[in-house]
Image (tube, rainbow, N blue to C red; front, side):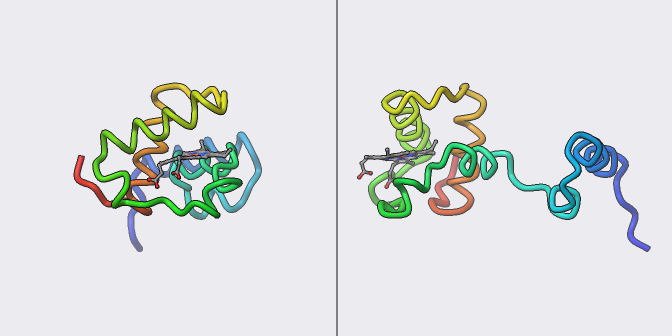
Length: 97
Ligand code: HEC
């Protein structure tokens, strides 16, 4: 049987005990994905697909997220912007950091 590292196990249990959402236990979503879903970014960006040519570096990606955050008054903290950037970069941009 595959050993599950204690850290992963205790984190899963922490999530499980906080919110009884089975999905969260089976696959822990990227924190940036959670922020992306919760803040409804796809409300606009489904029609404006993320464009790696336009936003052509990781620092620019951070700036673009900050632009939306500031202009729309979304109210994200800096660490949340970084998590979002990491998620969007993994999913759409694939820029080196
Ligand atoms: C009200 C509509 C709206 C919402 C909601 C919104 N954005 Fe944007 N976003 C824009 C517009 C407008 C631009 C800049 C113009 C463009 O890309 O055509 C932009 C640009 C961006 C870009 C750069 C675009 C590219 O093609 O690379 C990123 C990244 C981005 N937004 C992330 C986010 C994130 C993350 C959220 C959620 C926290 C969010 N946006 C929510 C309208 C929105």
